[in-house]
Amino acid sequence: MSARLAGKVTLVTGGRGGIGRAICARFAREGAKVYAADLTPGGSLENDAAEAAQFLKLDVTSEDDAKAAMAFVNAEAGRLDVLVNAAGIEIEETIETTTLEQWNKIFAVNVTGVFLTSKHALPLLRKSSGASVINFGSYDGFIADPGLAAYCATKGAVHALTRAMACDHGPEGIRVNAICPGYVDTPMLQSFFEGDGSGGGGGTIETLQQAVRDVHPMRTYGTPEDIANLVLWLASDEARYASGQLWVLDGGLSAQVQQMKL
Amino acid sequence: MSRFSGKVAVVTGGGRGIGRAIVDAFVDEGASVMTCGRGPRPDELSSEVHWARADVSRPEDVERLRSAVEDTFGPVQILVNNAGVQVEKSVVESSDEDWDLVVGANCRGVFNCCRAFIPAMQSAGGGAIVNIGSISGVNADPNMALYNASKAFVHGLTRSIAVDHGPLVRCNAVRPGWIMTEMADAAFALADDPQRAKQDALARHPAGRFGSPEDIARLVLWLASDEAAFVTGQEFTADGGLTAASPLQPGLF
Image (cartoon, rainbow over all chains, first blue to last red; front, side, top):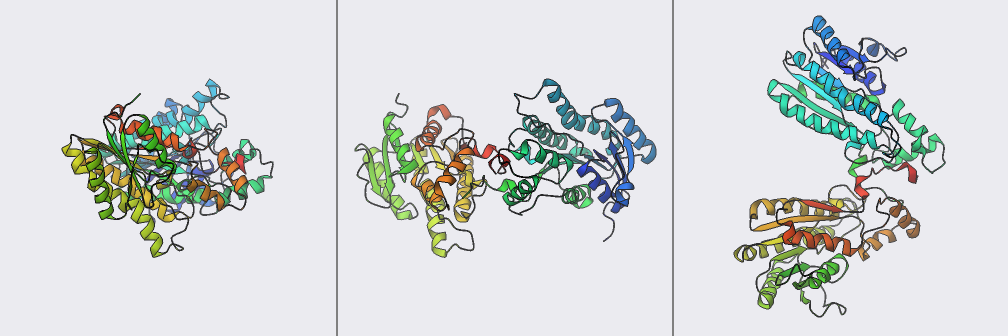
């Protein structure tokens, strides 16, 4: 198969995170020029393809950083074809135990980050012959996981922002979609397993992981590569008619009503 | 309070369960009510309620129901399509008879009744239809394939009726969750340990309890009332918060 992103200029925020680096690796293998934007370069990367992505320092909550990153891309590449807003954090609290500082921080990263990065990417995206923005929502933007209140709220905001951006910038040739993952094997999920996720069951992390798999119709949770596969499709010209949609990718989890222990 | 004084309401499947609660609530609030079922009139049905023996899956039965109610009370202003059946099977397990039963009652029954009552509602100045859908029409309950699909049909038909037959006819759907009826007991009876299954199910409800038929009746009455005059084409969930939460609840492992 020919490279599906040959010649495309792409930027992935959170590009050194769990899902972000899988996206960077896939994009690089498919022939794209990849900027992996993140707070820090992170440790050594697992494979050559991820290594091929060029690191770009970006704190998504900083407007100066967003402007500087886009100026850099503009100077080097002259345009941007694909923007993936994958940077995100999670706070495991109810609203009662969430501090205002935590609330502001998660909204700054998960929502304001999408706003700032996209806003300053627009002039470069307009120079593309077919631009695609891919945001990261979550199935938690539709239904609640217990003890993740602020996270759920940020993802609902990303869903609405995705539709709004698609409406406003579709006429300029910019497609905007959101991917809404369910349980994906990332450091964020491991932290959930080690924290409140263990609930009252008192089991080991392994039994918890198996129980989580068993609730999924596909009997597994996702990998970052599963998510990267859909990001790739939405980034590619095959998805030229796809815009304004929320793409749930969760192994069938949210297709069901809660499964009672029958 | 008698929000429905002088109104004529038809509630299908009002012999027991949710339908019975809807019938009783309409009677309490002053409506003239006719209900129907496939069997004889239940002994304990309130004497004010008129009973017609009718299988809603049969168009000729529904026509008889319509004539009976119009002869008794005059034109109908309120139709509640509550009659429904459930079969606990996957697609592969389901027989042709299962299909005819579930689709006949849950889909064709709603269609038959709407087709029969809408023209008279319109010529009498307007009316309200409330269909009983289900949360299972949006998210799947395991091994309830035809039932789940039949309720999605009800949701779709609700929107079409609202669009095609407004402004004189309003049409909305209610999506009940787990309501303690004989139908829910039948579902628990399938469990290895019905008591444990019930406890687990309870823990998944933010409201801390299952629904009662009266919970659904209260929502149906509001949708049928003039307070809901601007409400049409929508689905309203009453499930104690069940579907607001993720299907994956690690706290209950």
